[in-house]
Image (cartoon, rainbow, N blue to C red):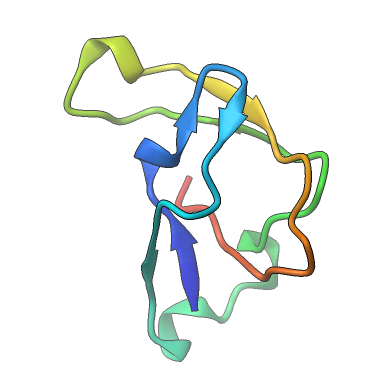
Length: 69
């Protein structure tokens, strides 16, 4: 199952191609799957410049992707 990385969220944009994968056992919570219109925030990063970024999920194009935060 695809899951976005925290690096996928940048000011005002979400990169739906910046993903990792989880096993099915780790992907059981339906609430972790993204919906169009979700507002994502980053809370962890290797750089202070990327902490607290936020963006709206605009078009998922029928993709089922999770977000770790």
